[in-house]
Image 1 (cartoon, rainbow, N blue to C red):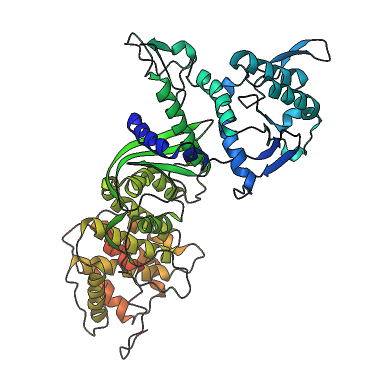
Image 2: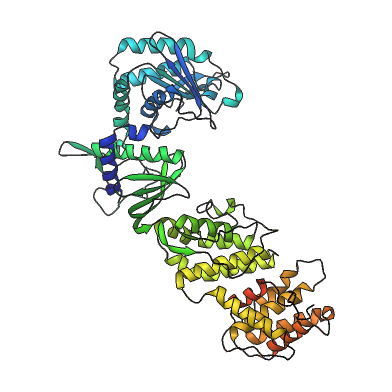
Length: 565
């Protein structure tokens, strides 16, 4: 799969050249100094929160910085020298302190100017190493650079607060010269280790360095059953384009574009975004470490950000005059709208920012909700970003019910009602079925008429029965006068799986709070009598029970000319 991705990238690179990489390249925090041929200086300061690409020098430094950085610290130019400490003991200094790869640049952390890790001998060793290994065509320019460095570098100083930032010094030269000098280093260091290289038909093949952790201490990727135990070997042309590909990915990771979709082009997106319309190709999810890390690599077939129309219904009416609305009641064909509603409605806005956060780092205080998020975030991500709906379809009913129950027990009744509406809308989208809004309206109207009747009526269906159970439970719990969160009293009812036990729990609530019920409470008496006189045919309908609990109370509502309480 990686080879296919590289082919796509190579086609892009052949058309756009190095601008494909440099245009998305970000300079790290630090001071950038250009030493001109006449000795004058141009400077650019880059700050973490103020990375102004509009500055005319930004592109100049970005092009040369990209070419001049080392591959990693293990492949830094050798600058180690020996020195004598105050006790007369021989020590080594200067190891891996210079982060550039050619004589036209000198990159260090600012703290190394005062830490004792760099001195004139280290500076000299840097240039001597480059000259001896790679050669320098312009000796006169090299002498100018060495002379300037000897006279200026160690005199520079910066505030303590900038110690972790970089000092990057560039010497004026055209971009082609920079490219040529950089390539000497890159070609010599681009493979994982020269000892793995082999020559085939006068071409060198080796193990690439990108996303590969094979060395003497980490031999896990070796193919022990083969004569050549390397996972795979590629030639110089292939390894160079692979390096550029991973450089391109790293640039995008640096600006938080970690989701990569590859079809005819390589496109990178921030979390929360994805290709518009239909997509079939490869998907990668990246993470930034010492190098760009591929944490997910998958084949995506027929993903589409435009989905079959999804409507958020309101089977339970909610009065938003005193509370903030969280979910959007609308019809959409954009999968992103569904993601936002699920994140906001079910997970307190924690889903879309925590698909891959370590569990310990998710700042969600509700333990059960956090557990549900962790268990289901992968299947939700696969739907929203890969078009795979199966995991969500099979698990949604169970965990959304848990979420609603949790909200009720914590006293968040409006939130629970919103979650109920969202749950119903999603299940209707996946499975179809009757219109819950119409069912609840008909059920509510039927019960309203019956509880206001002068003569005791009877319940005609399981739907009426379980809705009535919810209404009675809500009414009885509302009578509780303790300082506790009264909705937690619903817990025994929510956990009941047996209909006989359910009636017993309702009776317990009645016995606990009947002191507060007026004897002539016609509505309650009628409703409670109908419950006791009905035997359901099917298992407990939790959806209707919750709907009854979350709906406005029929017992308390005002109805004209009915002699209501």
